[in-house]
Length: 167
Image 1 (spheres, rainbow, N blue to C red):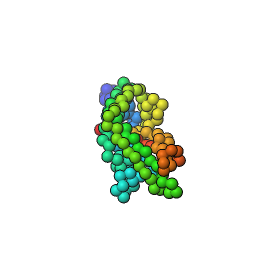
Image 2: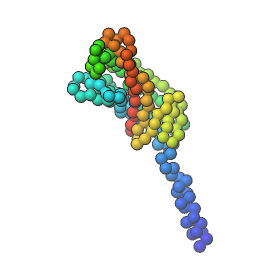
Image 3: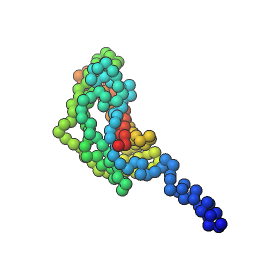
Image 4: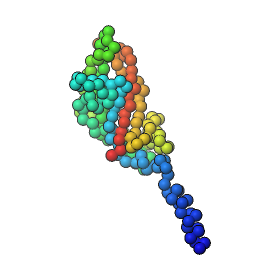
């Protein structure tokens, strides 16, 4: 009888210590594919008449970018997506743009660095990413530069949010 009572008392403790609600360090481990490059208000870069905040929907460059998070605290990327997108606001306009997109087909930027994972935040180097619903989001402030019509001066900037989805 004492054994049954001990089992009944300690079983819930064992189960709750084995399962950590939403704070599982291993949830981040694995391969993450770039699924969105979001810019507030979006653009119609491909001139199809549809404005999209996800630049991946607007450009024809091949996207092979992945992040690989390992359980030892290392994150790597061996095949990166690095298009060169230049945007110019037409003089005298508030929402008409010229776009120059060049897909990087020759080079691959690779890196390996450490990361730290705490609850719903991932720190890669000193860059903070948020983790929710099998998606990892990294915001790069002022990463999109918008030039004047002759591309000689930056007139404004926009934040770029990279979204990765776990594979």
